[in-house]
Amino acid sequence: MMTRRQFLQNTATCALTAFALPAVGADEAEPGIEILANESIGRISPDLYGHFTEHIGGVIYDGVWVGEGSKIRNYGGIRADLVDSMKRIKPSVVRWPGGCFADSYNWRDGIGPREKRPRRTNFWINDPFLQRAPDGPAKYEPNEFGTNEFMHFCQLIGAQPYLAVNLRGNTARDFDEWVEYCNAPAGQTTLSSQRAANGAPAPFNVRFWGVGHESWGCGGHFTPEESATEFRRFTAWVPSYGLPLDFIGSGPNGGDLDWTRKFFARLTERDHGLLDRVYGWALHYYCGTAGKGDAIDFTVPDWYELLGKAVRMESLITSHWAAMAEVDRKHQVKLVVDEWGAWHRPGTEVAPTYLFGQTSTMRDALIAGLTLDIFNRHADKVAMANVAQLINNLHSLFLAREDKFTVTPNFYVFEMYAAHQGGQSLRTIFNAPALGGEGSTHSLAHLSGSASLHNRRLVLSVVNAHATEPIEVPIAIRGAQISSGSGQVLASSDIHAHNTFEEPQAVQLTEAPVVLKGKTLVHLFPPASVTTLQLQLT
Ligand code: AHR
Image (tube, rainbow, N blue to C red):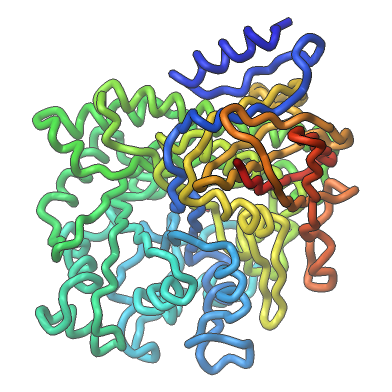
């Protein structure tokens, strides 16, 4: 059993290599949360709170795009309820148009007068789920939503665009020309004039470009060496129009360290300076029960198993980070976790064409909290993350069908955690018993979370992963004192709770009062909950 002193020493060592929450027994070490106000890990990029939209199932049609003539309230064809809700969570960046769809997309199909745009076969048409579904945009892409519409969506919600480039089917020239269409000054080139004719004279100034996507899979079944060669070719001399472009390489599937090592080695084989071309290294990880577990109907052991899988994100970050360092010794390149979330089997989608359109419950909300806390704790390593996917899909924040719309429990986690954006991530020690998840190989703690400092305001987020037990703990801040505070909590007496069109407020946030006894703060965290506390420091 570890004493408190050993616990502190142990976590200090971990922080140098991998910040893993240690599984400690509670006998000697009293449960508690200790925040080290003077130990910053790094700035929490707002881009950790990014999103992902793909032309798949019901994400774009009719999640995001309902059309200008629609009876559904819209802003230039974009679902107004979605825009209004997104503004509440300060979305920093949105990735588009895929996913695997990006690997078959030609951006030219999605510009110009909508009635003249070609209809194409959607990448996902062969998925068995769609064989049974009626025909529609999930199978046959109408291209009504293209580059200009996506940029308009980003402008409406105040997010930066992040475009995924088709490296499987298009050429490097197509890529250069998409950059030109988006970023060339008005009136200077035929493509920038086309952009103006399509309603957008000012450049879109797109900074983030994903050069390749899942190149190990639907993006071309490349070897890591081939993928690095293609990345080098595509990123050579791309016109920048005075805006530094941030290229994101197609990284590994989960724990495939071999992919990371071989890509970096091949990329730099003749010129180590080519590391400068890589802003981010895209890691994809879904904590899945794909094909197995139901999104809504699950047992308590299923709960622990999936939460245990979710926290594997931490070791994926630290292990890829270490593998990258074998070539990138100064850690120029950061991780971009541009697809993450829980993946359940079909059956809870709100429309028959909504491929992967699962309904999220409290379990998914806790997965969101656990994952965002991991990103915060690794703010020095992770530059961006994009939850998959925004609406009507895996781990979504929203469900929509025709004029019906609801937020899911995941939305509330993003709403609470928006307060972390831009703060200094602080080293925080959660001393709490480990929860052994059956079948789980990863250490899930009763309590975990993250903290960030914004001048004298501290934001603390805490997940109580226990399905049934509340836990009350003292919260100590080393190097500062709390003068006042407020809090919010997402909790339900039912771990399966979720919002529906009929009951859109079955799960919602409630206030979590902060009660100070003198200078001491003791807080009760309900079972299966996500809490954020905002504490004013003196
Ligand atoms: O998010 C659904 C799919 O999962 C994406 O298209 C693909 O990138 C991933 O494998």
